[in-house]
Image (tube, rainbow, N blue to C red):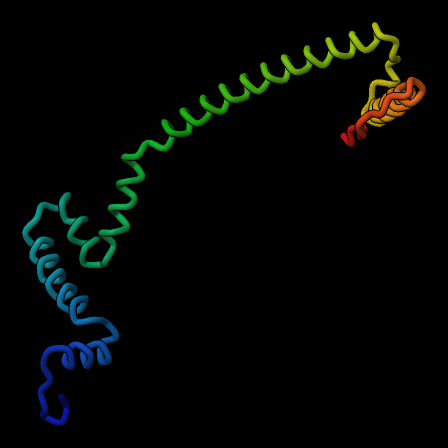
Length: 155
């Protein structure tokens, strides 16, 4: 320390952290890496020096991330996702066709039973259901039958 005292262990780590704004571990790693990097930079062939330079500048992690992205083959994943999406679209279209056919069949049956196209909407059908429930209740009452309460559908 500036006053001549020495610190060891945890106290030394804390003091070094205060002075350098980094932990002792990071400081030691940086010193070691710089020695290794300078050594590698001097000894290695020119085409291998970029790794040493990246290490010296602290860019190794970023280079590793970029290398991982390049190796990942994003375009292959995009093609697979596009293929799956297209298959999903086809299955949805098939389901829509099936539902539309069912709906058309039901409309045809309703028309055969006397309903007009204007009556084939939700509001009119709910009115008809309510009317039918009332008619059944009135009919049962005329016959002297007691019926359980039936509520018309709400949707």
